[in-house]
Length: 93
Image (cartoon, rainbow, N blue to C red):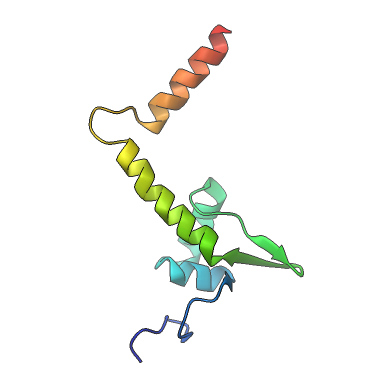
């Protein structure tokens, strides 16, 4: 049926396991978990001992990717440049 996720859920649940969260973001589970480990995607929440990702947290992470791209527009500093400058300021203190 049209409009269904790969796992046959007709709608994105609010809380998702890693497989569904990865499907929601249209990526593999491996790439999704790599993104979690480097901070691209939010960490899981512990729901009764089970790791679950909140759909709203995932949406916010996707939105922040777009915002980062806007901030890195032509003529603006990259994140690496900003972190380097911040480190230099801290070292000078």
